[in-house]
Image (cartoon, rainbow, N blue to C red; front, side):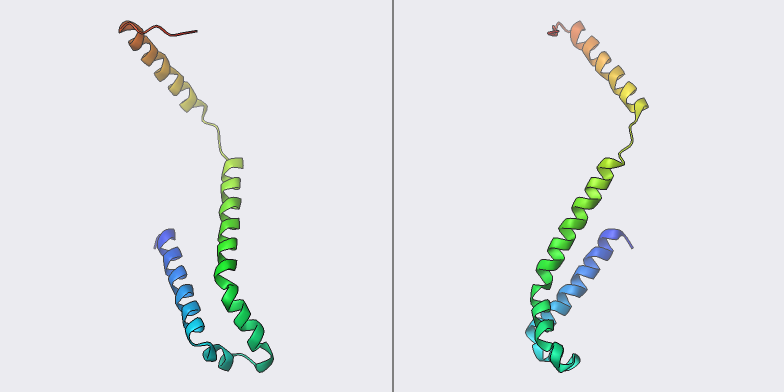
Length: 100
């Protein structure tokens, strides 16, 4: 199972649970002890926003980590420089003049 598929399945299950609780709040009231019913319904109402903020924070952290651990590729840089030099030579043969 790919990571994307797992994410979609988890998101679907959480969305279904959230919609069920929003549509039938008495199910949540029956499942929880009486003193915790009011705060629990408030948590359920703000859950999508909390999940969105959490996902955004995780995304920014993973992008930042990927940028910090990005490895240099000296072989690829040399190959790119050779390709640029070859392209310049071909353009010079066709009459293009470079400003230097």
